[in-house]
Amino acid sequence: MTKSVNTVVLAYSGGLDTSVIVPWLKENYGCEVVCYCCNLGQTDDLSGVEQKAIASGASACIVEDLRAEFVRDFLFPMLQSGAIYERTYLLGTSIARPLIARGQVRAALQVGADALAHGATGKGNDQVRFELTYMALAPHMRIIAPWREWHIRSREDALDYAAAHNVPVTSTRASIYSRDGNLWHLSHEGGMLENPADEPEEPMYQWTVAPEDAPDTPLYVQIGFEQGVPVSVDGERLEPVALLQKLNALGAQHGAGRVDLVENRLVGMKSHGVYETPGGTLLYRAHQGLEELTLDRETLHYKELVAVRFAELVYNGQWWSPLRRALSAFVSETQRDVTGWARLKLYKGGVHLVGREAERSLYVPDLATFSADAVYNQADAEGFIKIYGLPNKVEALTRGEQA
Image (cartoon, rainbow, N blue to C red):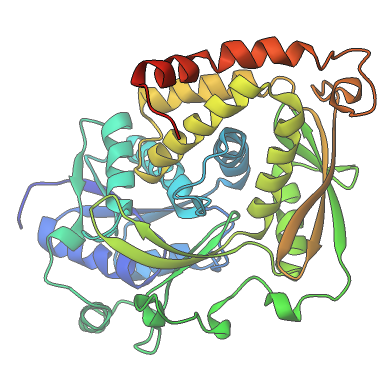
């Protein structure tokens, strides 16, 4: 026994790693283990997860359905912010962790636990995301990260440990990809992806159709928004979960949302991952199109800066930070007039914006047209350009240089 712990609540998925953590915690900490698992729309069958946790040695397993909360309170606010990490990653794994960890903290308080544990490795980002949430919401609780303590260093080691402790697992040594899925996305790491020079093999993809195998006829989809929140698809109002599920199905059918990215992990190394985010890709493109109509230039440009910082906060596990809350307040203010619809054309993996309309659009045809000067006098531009370009002219005159 390394330290005195009475009860630990473990973030539990039912996979190989968290299954072997249950007996390891009991063996090394002499504690009671309560597993916590939540449904975020992952493809894994959770019907037997409670029985599996008990069979692994847990005294109890708490299972919650947090899909509605996930979409409403995490995915849609992130969508409104425009957050995209390193230009392509829509943060599907990152945004789920603060919700899972919060649910875990609530469960720990409910059962009177004095410690929290997770199955994230010491090389990845998830350890930071889980533990920053623990520190923000339950600073008095001990944190246990087995991957930073135990002797297990590979999938093979974990399988051997499971066999030695009679832990029921479905993983085999033939499994080569590490995957994480939820309503927003499905990620792939490991296997042949460890060489970023190689094209990912088609059988690796689990969700989206290959673009070349997608239908030969384009599909048009119209998404309605109210204050930046998606509310309808093709005129049909849907609850958040149902709306995302419908867009996932449409996007996946047409090969939309595949991303191949070498990203910079928070812990300092680069990693190669492939992500499938069909519905999210459609929502981001539609939302961007509507903002083009409704945000003034200065707000839109500043919001682009905020989006980069917002993405970093999500990726780095700082969802519960004061800065994220402050940026969310700014984002909410920008969304007041983002009400209307955007039409997308899906074809062979492409997501093309082909129309948008907003109730309070700032696009005024009389100003944009080239055929009339009733509102905008083109001659007025001369004085504007002289004042706007004055710093350039002064610098050139004082420098005394000519082209």
